[in-house]
Length: 282
Ligand code: DGL
Image 1 (cartoon, rainbow, N blue to C red):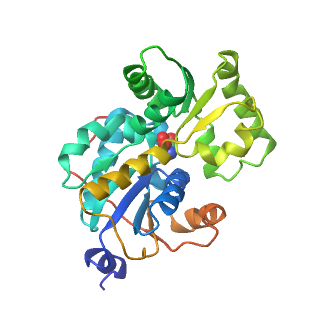
Image 2 (image 1 turned 180 degrees about the vertical axis):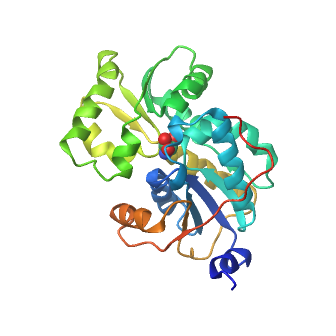
């Protein structure tokens, strides 16, 4: 029998969309920014929930996952892809940008630029893979050689967000431990170097001094995307279609979790990404 999911994905319907992807619900913080800055754009959202967290993956695995996602998105009528995932941006952006026929944008440079404009004492909280890549310090030192950057990896944050435990007391204890070295370094600006972390802003803001400035790289990435869409004559002028949500893991879990940030129950489909012939080295 024909699978209705396949049919829906095989037929090109509606306007060309912007594809965004993350390992899970972190990308919703980027989606929120797209709704704010690009309200006429239709969006295809993919969450690789079967394989999260990306932060504990090897660079080879992350590159393979990103290639799979972009290959699938290429078959879904996308005109641009924004990586709604810092880990993918840090590890895979440069490799995949020339491989696909649409613009692919990442979060690192826009985030580094926004921070370097504001401060010389910058803290970065990110996944282990992003911290290990050195992508943020490299980008910031290139833009502002006199600045100082301190990074902390926060491997417990993504599981906290994905298991919906950010209101629990242990979330605050974990955050205090992670932020301690940044407070000791007297940072005045903090980059959310993982798209899951703005979901924890209510907790983080009660720990760091009130004068701390927060950089959500999504704000600058989406602004850059708007400019690129204009430059390419690709900006939509008609109202957006509702966002299509696809995940690699079971749909109900994502649906239950996402409702608190979206304000409504999204329609979510589970899809299978294409296997590619080049496998990651593990
Ligand atoms: N939200 C993603 C990021 O910005 C991935 C987090 C993870 O899966 O570890 O890095």
